[in-house]
Length: 265
Image (cartoon, rainbow, N blue to C red; front, side, top):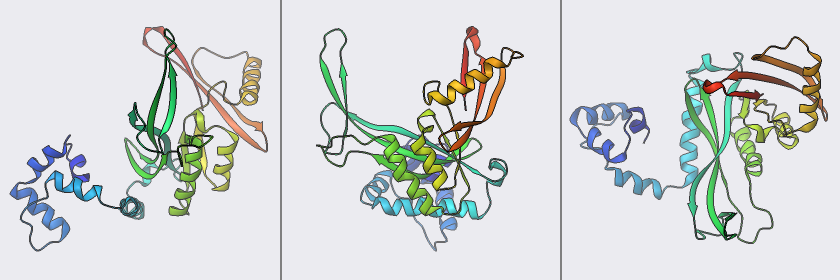
């Protein structure tokens, strides 16, 4: 799988065709330190093997690879402020079904505005933590977003999954100086506490309605500044929120077609 992606091949079938050549087989043999290697496994063989492999084994392999890369200082130049490793957190959908797939499915109900008909979709999502190094990202942790059983009163969600994922990452990379990169979902008190408990830095996108007190103070201070120009950057440091202080930066830029958009960090 990894050599396939490194070679820019788009399918497992193409990998089987392109890799089973004498030169490639010989290179793989040397890389693995084998005395002999007649052929590389077919992609069906690889898929069958992976489907029967315990997920924990794959996580162990992934952790070993990431730790080796960090140990060999391969990505030192990509640290934030020369110290922190950027780790981006985001959830993504894996599968969607019109009928219940299993007792762990997430459920979401949609209503047709015209007919009033209600439809239930069943989904499987996963939360990923990826190490950001330039234009590349490397997965360092995964946590499935799923219900414990069918009859739960409150469904699992991305924030609950982040709490579990954060514990795994801290346990696996105990001393790694991390700066979490997340969207506005992660700008909230429960997540701030996790950052502090794990001694992580964070840089999150912020939406106007996410924490009203922060945005209200930011807006008031901005209105006091009379030298604002259209475009550029405006920031306010040390905005008090509960028992901590946060910094908010507004970036304003123009898109083509005269569109304007604000982003808060």
